[in-house]
Amino acid sequence: MIHRRLVLILFGILFLPSVGLAQSTLKERSRDFGISVGYIFEGSAYFAEPDRYSAHTAGPMIRAFYDSFLMERFAVGLYAQAALSDFPRYTTEEGTILVELGFSAKPRFLVGEKMALKPGLNVGYRTYLADDEYVQSDGLGLNLGLELQYDIGASYLPFLEVGFISQPWGGNDETDITFDPITYVQLGIAF
Image: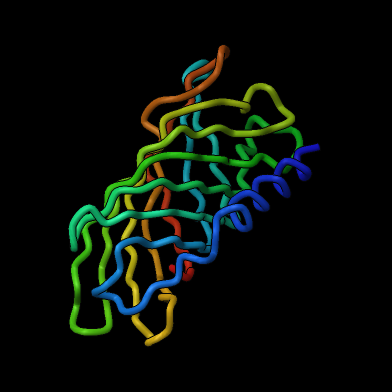
């Protein structure tokens, strides 16, 4: 059941947005549509009711975003991401899926003719889809990331993104679940 949900989420992230958003050079871009894949590292999550920590396991991560530049050097946008992760202290089965949808704000700093840095603040609604009701929860996703885009002269830009996700508020009817920043690394392309 949980794997069907992941397939539907990945389909939505990868194939529903239009790929016909290709543009020319780095400086002339008025929007970015990006897709990236990567890895979220292990961290720890705090469960308030038993007053204990659990590992937030490492796993693969996928993200899609759309940024619209309001000015030459500042964009706002939308993002969606999903990752496989578990809380081994409290789950009996593997396969918990983190799903998040939200808004972003990203300034763009040109580094020479061919590179751009885009630090970003992402704020979104996060949910954990799990067969175990104790970890099935919702929360506030508060994330920071840094994209390094490189102009290869094509209609798309490859990029590397490094950042972290955090959850300062969240949980379910049984417990509050929060966690400090957890690092991720991704590679992707922006159209």
